[in-house]
Each structure stands twice: as structure tokens, then as C-alpha cells.
Image 1 (cartoon, rainbow, N blue to C red):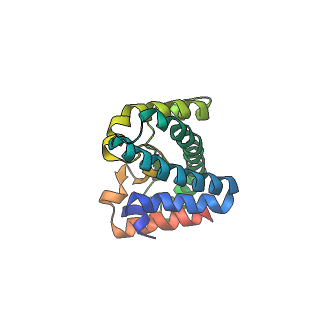
Image 2: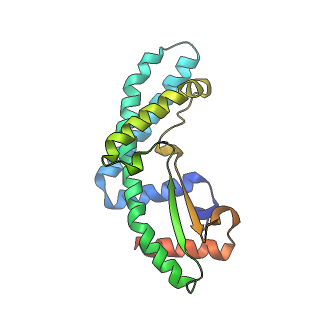
Length: 183
């Protein structure tokens, strides 16, 4: 579990996915569909790069990516909005008040969607804009560069990134705080 803090981003995404799949059946279905969409879209991106497909064929897969990916991003964000205050309080108790923990969600979809009244609508627009901006790179690399499959978490205690600068003891305390908050 300590790899959750300093390991690969895929481990942190997996943690979020497992947690959400246990409590939200729609999330599980959306995640499964999203993974299939990314696979198909990546295949199409490679075919476009080879000159065997047209760019306009991405439209369908982009809409699917935005629909399912947007839902996944919002659910992950809401989960962290719930876990953050709980884990912060638990972490404060574990460290005798010495550290204030913050868990930050780092979505690959850039934009002001977090501050919007209708987060879902603005997230969809931001997602679409991000896809348009990165389309050339995606075709060149043959992979999708935007979406929840590229998101990450950051664990910060007293304004220090524990994934980079945290001791093993601090990282253990973070994982314990997170697991207790989850329970």
C-alpha cells in the first residue's frame, strides 16, 4: 500500500477505481466502457497516423471518451472531496497535530471546470478543447493523451509533496489515514 504514495500514477488511479467500484455500480460500468473506448480510440489514432483512416472518424470516439471519462473524473473528484476532510483529521491525530494532510486530484483535463456551477457541462467543454489541442500529438504518438487514464493524485503534508520528499514513515501515515478515512 505504501506504493500508493510514491509509486506509479496507475496505482493511485487503480486505488480510486477500486474504491469507487465497490460503492457505485454505474462507475464500474462507465469505467469498463471507458477502457474499451480508449482501446478503440488508440487503435484509430494509429491508423490515422499510418494514413489508413480519416481524422473525422475520431468524432464518435471523442464523444464517448468525453461522456464516460467526464463521469469518471467527476466521481473521483467527489470521492476525494469526501475523503479529504476525513483523512486530514485522522492524519492530524496520527501525527499528534504535526502535519496537515491534503490529497489533491490532478486531472489531465485542464480548465476551470472545478469552479463552474455546472461542472459536468464545463468539464465536457474543457475535455473537448483539450482533445482538440492535443490531437496532433495523439495522432503522432498513437495514444490518447487526455482523460482519466492520465490522472493522478498528490499527497501533501505541510505544503510538501510526500510522493517526492516524504519519509517512509510519513508515507505510511498517509496510507493509514487514507485507509481509515475510506473505512
